[in-house]
Image 1 (cartoon, one colour):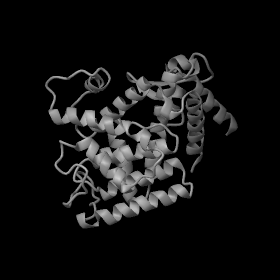
Image 2: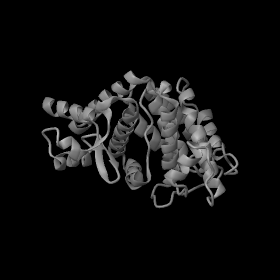
Image 3: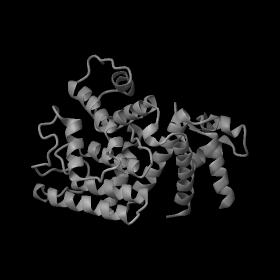
Length: 304
């Protein structure tokens, strides 16, 4: 792991410590967890072509209201994915088993896909990807090996980000379902993070091309891009949650406001945010970070 990752992961660990001091993950205020579930559901479905906007999803999941003129499968996927996401916290104490994988697929796709909760019985190709998933008769053996490999690496103390990247890449490579592999794979990835006391990450439409590129790079044996991507996504999740449950130190502010109070220019901070050395979130086109994240960044620079 290089210096950049050491620095970012140290900052992430400090932000996580602050979050868990305020509220253990299973004790986050219900409204915060519901909002997190809505964001996760919108993002994971949208990158797969679901037509509902973020406002549509929030209207359904947070306000309990209907949305007119939207395809019924897209609405069902939204409601049922949120149910699957809600089930992740109670699943934390248990090992990740093949039964969990099938159950998550069934929860998201029941009534939508005829083979919900069943391994694929056809051979498939992934659009735009050179990698060809294994033949259907190999799926069960490969998924059993995936389950064992994850449990073994977890028991040996593999880091949360390298292990998460590997388990997610291998799941998507096997492509065990006819359809819905991305959504179930991302639910499993977030179950992995929750089991290791990290909050869930959200992969949103602007992240799609980088996410797919970093997965494709894994076929050449390089998962460093996927690991880096997951660290960046985790930074955003931590900033977002702390903004909701933390102190004034955790309030998200545009970089130009942060620059006015410190030694760095807004341009420099924007560069560091873009290089993913400073955790930041884009809001309405502008990078935002928190005073706490900026202080942790300064501390790390001072130690380097």
